[in-house]
Length: 83
Image (cartoon, rainbow, N blue to C red; front, side):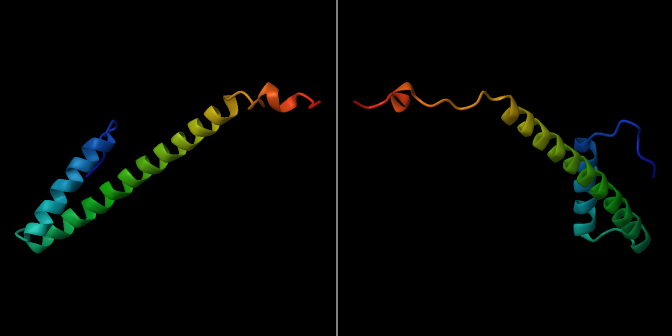
C-alpha cells in the first residue's frame, strides 16, 4: 500500500489503532494478519518519524526562546557599596 502524499500523523495513528484492534481480536486469516502487521510496521515508522521531527522542532524553538531572553539583571541594591 502506498502512502498518500499528504498523510497526517493523526490519519496514520488512527489507521494503526484500527490495525491493532483487528489483530488483537484474532479473527483475521493468517495472510491478512501478516499483511496487517506489515502495514502496522510502516505506519509505526511513519508516526515515529513525525514525532521525532516534531521533537526536534520543539527543541529548536526552545533554544531560540532561551537565546532571545534578555540577560538577567541584578537588583540595584546588590550593586550599591555599603557605608
